[in-house]
Image (cartoon, rainbow, N blue to C red):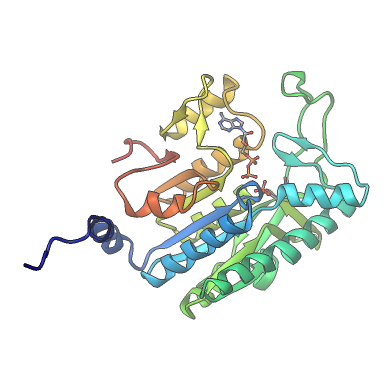
Length: 304
Ligand SMILES: Nc1ncnc2c1ncn2[C@@H]1O[C@H](COP(=O)(O)OP(=O)(O)O)[C@@H](O)[C@H]1O
Ligand SMILES: CC(=O)N[C@@H](CCC(=O)OP(=O)(O)O)C(=O)O
């Protein structure tokens, strides 16, 4: 007699797909902004996973918009060129030469690499920076006051570090409308004509807010926000984040990351999620399964 019982491995695959069905229905047509951090870029295998995830999202009717970083890669290039660099409150102090190198690395090499990975995975991506078609207008950020507790010995002018003050979303809408995945480098043009280096988290949050994204993902190299004992905090609200900053639980690059999550949810994004980009397909697991991962930031009620 023929055995009609299905192979358990195949059955598990079918179950994964059916588990995804409500999420596929809920998110079809929505825009997801994905911040791809320099630390999350990892090895070629992880880069391929990331690109496949973006192409898969597009294939199921979700519109991914990628905003990338590249802090470590800028750091390596500065070192090769013998240019010193330092961070204050998670922001790179940027003189004119550093701004030029940051643009070269971000809008030049990294942006085009990501476009290439997505192309290899069978998708269509176009790489732009905040300068293209007036996407992001930047303004110089204020200096930082001396505060020995935060390692700031005297007042620091951050130079050409900008923050987005206006987003003209039309170029992104056009690309999405043409079935293309936009890949955006965190460089902006000031009204003063200067090129500004923008923290990639801040850039991504501003774009997520302007697009009214349903979800905002930040891929980094930690499991999420960790408490002082090193345990993952799975749900946070804007009020929690103020407290974590004051008591020193979060520092360095986590400060702009969480500030941008707060700004994005306050601008109307449903939820922001900080995820470990080193975990293969972390985003797919977060979006399409009941097993949430990382730290979710939303206005009030906890994770469903
Ligand atoms: N409470 C915290 N939980 C997790 N990471 C933290 C915390 N406080 C500071 N960090 C630091 O923030 C880093 C993530 O920010 P960043 O280096 O800017 O990442 P990315 O390059 O992905 O944007 C972590 O690698 C960690 O060193
Ligand atoms: C002002 C500022 O700090 N700009 C960042 C831009 C890149 C970035 O943010 O990259 P990650 O997301 O990989 O950290 C920098 O110069 O490193």
